Amino acid sequence: MGELHDAHDPGVLCMLRRFTGIPCPGCGSTTVFIEAGHGHWSAALAANPVTVVAAVGLLIAPLGPGRWWWGLSPRHRNVLIGAAAVISWTWQLHRLGISRP
Image (cartoon, rainbow, N blue to C red):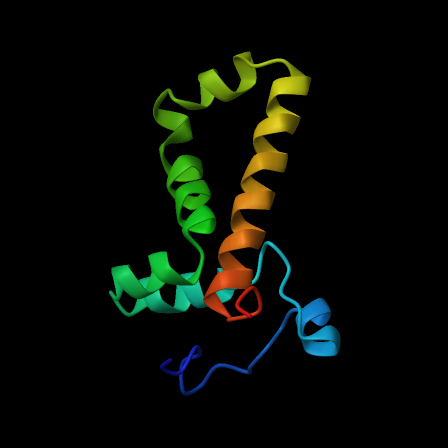
């Protein structure tokens, strides 16, 4: 696997991953923005697809789609947030090779 961080990146910022080696659902989010800033869209998507989807959602929310989110009940919003966290965490465990035997 190639280098996960930019040459000038400070390294692992996630305290959970730094001290336990286990990534959190948000791991890779800094890398997403570093890679996107360099125009490396596929690397950004590979770092944390959930962060990419959330960022795009936040960017387009003021254009109208944000009404959909606030139209959901709090319970449904919590279910979607929980599902996104599980998907993101599963992705991080796979990406970093922790889920492999």
